Image (cartoon, rainbow, N blue to C red; front, side):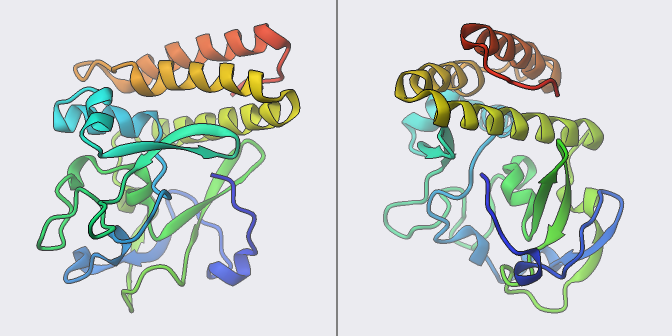
Length: 230
């Protein structure tokens, strides 16, 4: 999701790398679940999230929609899935009655990142600390990679950048080529990266990049679209 913001208004004015320390530690969120409530359609899911949720819950991606954990919305011209808040309370469907995350070990990347954000530039990104989002005061310093807590973290960062700029390039092509092209692009993305199941017993990255390279070539070949190399 592209957001055009003044970093000085929403952050401490600094940009961080994965090895930097940042004041994000919140004492295991004890007694607070505010960031899991009333999030509307903002918890956008990427292919890694689909892989982790499907594997962790032992269900297919289609079942995640069928059981109303996820739904689709348009993000910068591209149709993408997001966590569907509950109809009665507006809370995350994975939030327990005690205000704890029931999928913490395989929670989405958006949740892992909070209260950090990513600042994208030059086909890469750095992190920033959102100073007005988390209610916890006097947060402790923690290394960024430890806070996000993803295995194979360096590979994860490469994937995040590749997926972001792939969607960004596609969003620009959709705005230029119109509705029919948008339909073709979105159908391919949903079928290949979202609804098509991943093998939970195989490493995610080879599965993703097989699809990624095939999709990039197919989309670029269909209409000469400039989908840049990662």
